[in-house]
Length: 143
Image (cartoon, rainbow, N blue to C red; front, side, top):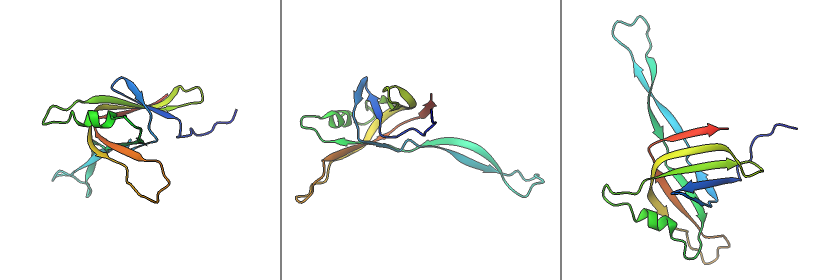
């Protein structure tokens, strides 16, 4: 059997104990900031580079608009001054048997932005809405 890279079109997103369908997930990035340091008595003429704090990108989830589906807006409406509803979100890349192969675990996420679909009288596309999440951590498991 040949060893091929995984296709990226078969995935699921779980949040708040339920599975939600999305057409696109982006922003699953983690970066470690670099701290540069050089003490005055160093014999080297360059700085040391040490790992600093981790930085996480905002995550954008996109899906088609369905009549009567207000999941984005209900969660967004919980955002009030210091009383937001934080949720753990799990994004799973699935294999042919619908089993998770790679999992991104997102900690304490909450919606910071909702973008409704654009409207065009001469358009021929599906209406797509998106939600942007901020979070406090991302771990990746490649199983």
